[in-house]
Image 1 (cartoon, rainbow, N blue to C red):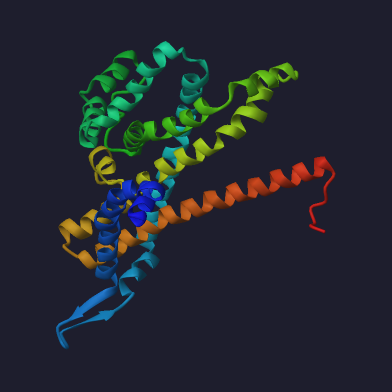
Image 2 (cartoon, rainbow, N blue to C red):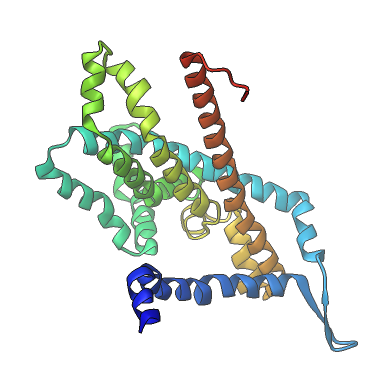
Length: 302
């Protein structure tokens, strides 16, 4: 009884987390292990045995595949940057300027498109950007866009679809950080004589950086492996990492090479997370050193 009582009182959080942990093990980690096994083991019909090999991972050194990786990485970074330029003012307005009466409605308006299927969102932009679509015809009528220019099946259409689908994932983390921020700090900054720009630069922006980092990760990582948006809005002119994986699995039926490409793509989020972790640590070290210098404390531990 004491053992059960201890579990209920002290390990209750772990018990509630067990379903989520089991879900991750069976539907996330085990498929990843299966992909890894497919990519590094080759079945030989001569001796009827599996042999370990890394030959499929050498395709990354092919110039064509390297170009696709660079194109996917560049598109993911550009998408995250555009989302940041749009999301930060929106999150700032919602957290610090918008009335509480309308804040819930505005948040629902931002989240609502994410409740629909991604394919529905993509096809909505497809019909908007096609030559006979509303947006394209409006630009033709106003004379902003010449008749010879098409807004579909190009890089512009891909960026529009990417930003539209991933924008909420940038807004919400920044909003969550700004909304939890102690508003009295802003008032204290104004009382000390700082103008709005100085308050934003020295108070609001540093405190909002965790939300910015989280938003960049939530946008960059899925944007790198996205394949539906480039396929439907970009046509066949642009090839991305996700398109290669789909082609290997569904068209070529080469599951081993497709698993290798997928595993290489999984390494990208790890590199991005490590990169942001290093930046965060460097900022903390610089900040601590500045604080030590202002306090007259030496950097060297004596």
